[in-house]
Length: 453
Ligand code: GAP
View 1 (cartoon, rainbow, N blue to C red):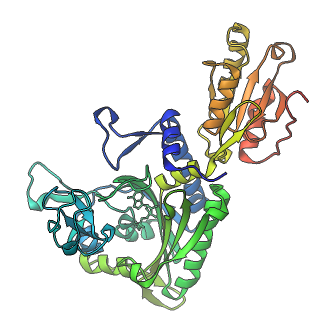
View 2: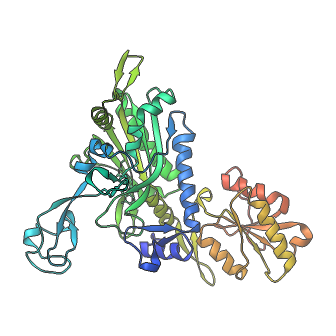
View 3: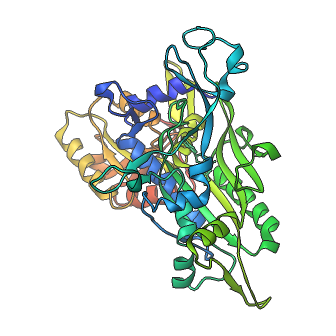
């Protein structure tokens, strides 16, 4: 089945409580979206999977959680005040603004793509993508501060504190998950290009002689995370090294991990950049601090090079939804299934009474839900017929549904149904929480049989 387009995903996301347009009752706001009850679970599960693999399972990476607003000198030193901009063209007639690279020709020679008037487009001007604000009670130029456009700079600004407090030697990394803000001119494609988004970035500090080896390591490790941990189809992912003329001002080499989105084509999910010593040297010069480490083998101080894997959480959420979405034709109806990895699913187990007008079944099912909750995220639902309840859970990617039926009152067991195969296991109440926790963690194999077998 071809991957679904963004409209299909946005509709499912809204209908089922994953993602809503921000401040929708006032007409929304371009580039801003809110995560609903299921979306926040999915997003948190993706963040946890990244933190576990990039920080907790390694002994050479530590984490921080820095303030969003930093001293504005950080952004002067990093080059963002002068260089984090896109060339923009304005129409003097309709007042709309366009990215120069979206125009089909030189501004002087073409009509405005919006209002069609000729000779009204300005020459390109640099438009800085950072959101500015004021800190303190007085709005004057001295109080200007910026909402960070990337989380990375805090890792450079805190390099000395982290290295000293954690007694780090090269190579080591500092990781962070947090909000970033960019005044994108053309936000869109649902949650692909946002003005407020979450990033997961890690700055890995290495001896300059080891840069190529570590660059290759991180390109490979990050690609494997997308396929093996997030479960994204390998044939819809590829690695794309940057051409020399598209490298960021700080980068010597960059490889993007891209996904083949329907209607959009290959688009960036993550970039692995070799930032060299650009940032540490820039901050050392601007702050007057020595941002270097002592290399005992060589008996000298070195300014480390930095290999940076940087990704957007919202793009990962979008990719998981697009890649997991499937439609199946059953005998009597169409089934929409979100085939996402059980670890990522917002709900791991849904407990459903077969008959909602039987109080003993409802009571049993509610008690089972309470027993499940300490082990896995579980929910109880009796707001529709059993067929509808199954479809609803399939659509939100719940890997296991547990049905409590009249027989349960006699045999003390319930039926677990597997989302992907729709096969079933009959398991006693006491063993259900452990069984589902083991299945979700991949510690045991599913042994279901077809319904009625
Ligand atoms: N520190 C390096 C850096 O920020 P970037 O390529 O500009 O590099 C890293 O951003 C990742 O952040 C991208 O690969 C993308 O996943 C995500 N990202 C960047 N801009 C975004 C936006 N406007 N909306 C959503 N995600 C974005």
